[in-house]
Length: 324
Image (cartoon, rainbow, N blue to C red):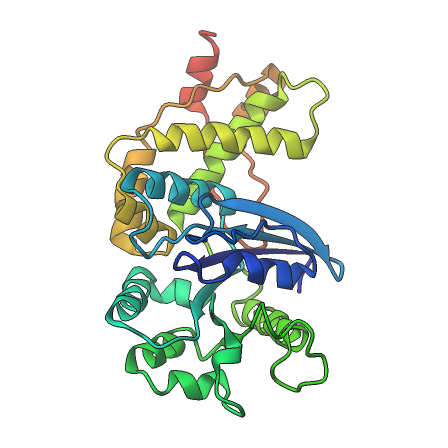
């Protein structure tokens, strides 16, 4: 893995996303819900050092089922967009190893239809409840028994792993039914995937626009922050951008999810709305001078490798700042 790694966990509510994150980190960092209706209710990002790599995992609610109200789902997709901007290195799509009812197949179909081909280049299929696999069967063979599953696996470039968060944690000698072994294989898969993607994270114009809005707010906060750390400034900037995006009229749940996952028409729709948002920023005099010197643009430092940003056009911001 590189110096930084961003991972977004996606899947149906109760598919084991939080447990997988804990397995990857090797410690309990995400709280597990053991109630009758388990599942993450809010997007949450946690970062830990993993073998010299700063790994950030974003746990999400079920974006592909009907357990969450439309308003809550829209808010959480918005939160995910803000947290992962300007883009993650990997999407881990979680499914239970189970008998697939019509409802389960519908979720798989939604995933296939929601992801763009570009997003699939950064996707890995991960199954939980691996102990339900028949003895000696590997997960790829299980996928071949269902046409929809096989299609999803092929869209993910054949990248597939299996875990069991209940029975495989204390099975160190088994050559397959072993969470630690599967964890190492998954990390190697992501490392190879990043290399195949030219060491670039996944991104698109909407995610880059959100990152520009965040950095725009960082400039405002930094000018009056006192002794706030960089981490505190960025967190405050993300909160501001989240609150503004949450109130943006006309952005639907399907539009946001499609834009996050690279569907061009959805990206265009969200971008049109984002560019109408007014976000007044107080820009220090030194920055204004630098902006003039760079023909009206502020340089952007990208959060992840290889994401292309064009800078913030500050002409309108300069007019606003002169009236503050």
